View 1 (cartoon, rainbow, N blue to C red):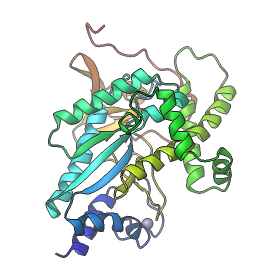
View 2 (view 1 turned 180 degrees about the vertical axis):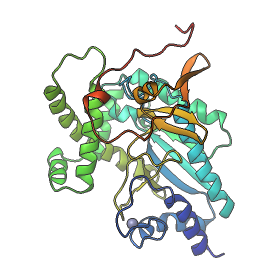
View 3 (view 1 turned 90 degrees about the horizontal axis):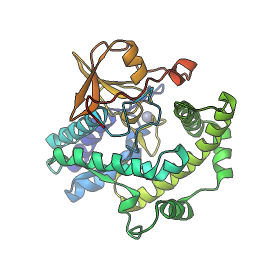
View 4 (view 1 turned 30 degrees about the vertical axis):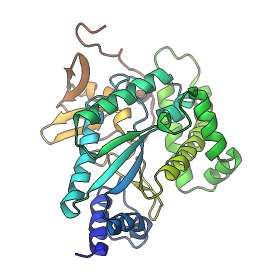
Length: 338
Ligand SMILES: [Zn+2]
């Protein structure tokens, strides 16, 4: 096989795991718009005989909404995703011995001020992901965060975010224009507004739904701006990498939306969900749906980890009804945990 054939095979392995519903006329693996968007990065690595590098912004911190997750630290849901991504790299190694390396660009620090999560909580989440990766050695996965950027050493977290905005930020008016024009920017804005609204319904919140909705819309623009700034920094640090995304992407996009589990769960991620073990393996579901279905909670190392069986029928819908916003039970504590 020549380098062109090997590159095409590697790309097919990745594109097979597209996230989100395919668009008409786009079979990602052979799509005349999707393949050329990502082939040059793969081809350059194959010609040089080095591992193909992928970057995946994500794994920020757990959602603050206890109706969705079990706590603030990564759990079995993150492990399932890390194992899935490591499996993808192993599949590439079978056709290309130098293999594929995937860098998780953990972005909790980038968004924590906008999503109302303390930086200490982000640090604890990142540290636990690093421990999970260390236990999987020699897993072809690694973690990169803004804390690792040269020159950020000794900066406060606010100063890191300011530097990111100043160096890579986009004008807010430009982003508003793009959202108004529709397409991918509008899809992302709507999804982020929904997540931010859901996550603002934490226990004890007293503001009205319309006030929270206004706030969610405002913060969604901030999250898009920061996300692009982070994307700019990541692209500069990993110029030869294939750019993956945790969000579904449109056909031919410079980024490719990749699944984090074998099941295609649309916009759901391990940090907005719990892992549920069934006879067919693990899937992601919202915690409240899982509890309603009567699944059994499993603890590991003194912490709630995942649920077993009694699977809710489908991944959560894209709607944001009162049921998904309210009714969170208190965070389950492990027996004897502090
Ligand atoms: Zn396509």
